[in-house]
Length: 85
Image (cartoon, rainbow, N blue to C red; front, side, top):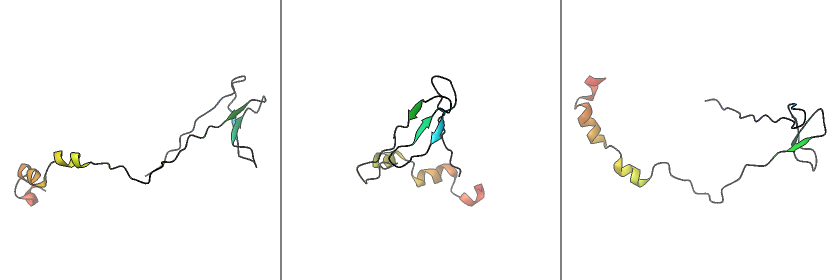
């Protein structure tokens, strides 16, 4: 499995230059800056956390009521499963 990074490219509104990334330094937050002019673009923090520690179920009890049963699948596939493989 590979992870993909999403890169958002920011450009200077005055010169159209690709903004460079500046690492956080002491009390200053990380930011984008234009190498040609004094433009600085602040980075908004979009990451949040959930308050509760509960895990939302992927399959609910109602979904399981409508799910096919093993007996139904065996009847449709045939009684001798080994012959079908």
